[in-house]
Image (cartoon, rainbow, N blue to C red; front, side):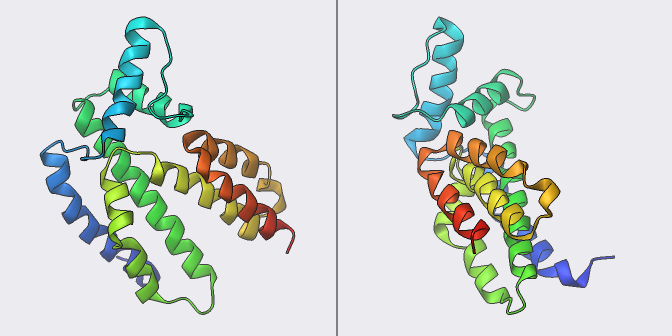
Amino acid sequence: MINVKKAPFYILTFIQTLFFLPFFLQSNIGSDWDAYSLIGTYLIFEESGQYFPSRPPGFPVYELIVGLISKFSFLGIEKSLLLLQYIIMILLNYLIFLFFQKRKDSNNLIFIIILFSPIYLISSFTVIDYTFGALFGFLSIFVAQYGSKRYRFLIPIFLAISIGARLSNIIFLIAVLISLYQ
């Protein structure tokens, strides 16, 4: 039986899944050249042992993950990477849902707008580091705001993963510091 409180999460994730399926079935990793350069970084490193960042200054955490998925893909590189993106999207959806559940003035309309914003959907359906970095950045904020003190050791780990995936995610460090010192 479906938990009524979690129904918005389940329904919206199901609808997003319907949107995602054509991308997955066609193995379309996105039209953004960054997706291909991430794979290229791994292929060059595997062939020559030299690291050339997919984009300056480099996004080593996500490039490493893309490389590992590419090396050990069981569905083919594209489908395996898309499956990773899909899992990241669902985890990020749930984390955003948890943020809304923690607020007394929670608004499902805003939750819907976030999950169906074109930027969010395109980032979730493209092999790119945005949603991966956001997942760990928001996890660090969530632990800072709502986690017990015994889990605070995870904050720097989550921030390191987020910033290592995308340097501009340093903004999450600022948000965590503000959250901790309020």
